[in-house]
Image (tube, rainbow, N blue to C red; front, side):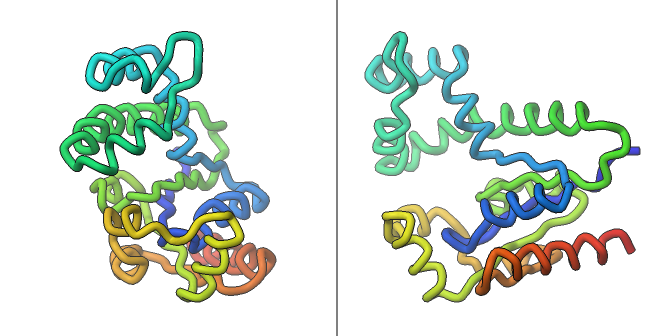
Length: 194
């Protein structure tokens, strides 16, 4: 039997990655689409296409892809971002499907973290969706602790966390401790089991 697939999203610094880790500690199969993108950016096909489009400095031979340089290009020019997303999104879909297909047959849940779940129209590929939300002051504190402010340019590309929460089938508030988050996710899994 195939696992119940859960698309996980949320606002910047709301705690998506922490929620993914908590799901993992609860015994759930987890995948970060950001990690998949990171791997794809190092793959020969995408590196070759990016070099053709933007020059060798974005993916120097024998060196890792320069994600900072790519970010500088795509966040400054929406057309370049659209091009890159048109290359990456289908590949992420293929890799995600491949990952799900390789899970053991008794896997109950598969959680895939997708920061731009609704923006990329990917919500329909999952059995259900979860949005992690946190109070604005909590999000700012977390972002500052990670060494960066909530970046307006990044936030401008995304739906607000309120819009994500509105579209998600389940919303988990992450204003407390890691233990509180894990408890809330455990309760959600129990609810999904029916």
